[in-house]
Length: 452
Image 1 (cartoon, helix red, strand yellow):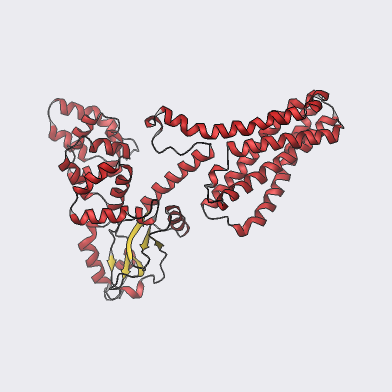
Image 2 (cartoon, helix red, strand yellow):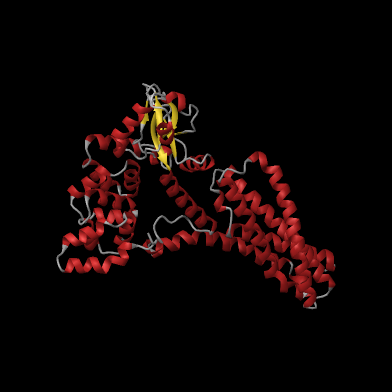
């Protein structure tokens, strides 16, 4: 494995086979490739060409490739293949991947696809779709290995061997009673290493970490990360085991949530599609809202400058450092908010820690502000602005960095208290807030120091 996409590398060769009508050679070449490479390569083809290549794949390979394709490409493929082919694909897909696909499709298309499923799979698909959006129930799969506590290790391994091909994972197995209540969790490795006559209940973990079907998917990801799990059982309100969430599902969640947080922190409403697939006007609309808020907030800086116009006219050199000052304060605020948001996301920060957090950020603000103030003083002195302006800038830098730190700390906490995404209280928003109040502080200090 070189890490390169074999489909892209061998595409000219496969095309030459197809031109020669050597379809068997093309099929053999595709069968030796990783499904992930094929899925990525198919995205760049026209719908007709994509379908042609897809039909060269074996059934198992085709299903695996389909599961790895992006939602837009999946929908494009569905629109250009026969109903029979669609039915075969979605019937054999893993339940969690199928639910994710149906979530992305229009309601009319979903209804059509559900009708093509077998009664058993249709019932299961409807059940998963009825769980709340972004919940553990929505992303779980019911395809897990279940064992009984009174089984011997040998009986358990025999059962695993008989049903393994249809299950999501075999490395972690789940022990349930007759009513399907979760009794414990056991690793395949422990079963293999145990004496054949040893009872499962004697070697299982009888106090397993689990989550509920109604738990938020972000919370599930945090739990799995905290306890270093690659699989977590999901129970209903009656404590019955109904499914599992696996590590690959959590990776998708983390990528989705991280992308959404990055967009919010940049002042952009979340964009679901890839950059080049998003309609231009949709992209403009997603960015326009926060830009309007920022420009309205920044408009207050004009009022501040007008209010202190006499001070500015008296000491024109004060204007030299306005960009430096507001830029420094905004940067300090963005740094603090980034640390806060990350801490809240991974569960390191809670309300009980607010006192310690404010103390730490106050102290760090003073230390950072003091160090930067020395540089600011030196720069003002080099420009020949005089001792008064140099001291004004020195005190203002300390104050503005401290203000930025506290704003970046408190605003995300306020957002969480209001049940908003803390990521919206960062980036442009904090910068504009610190800009306005930073100017007020700057000119008030100037008035006090320069007696203007």
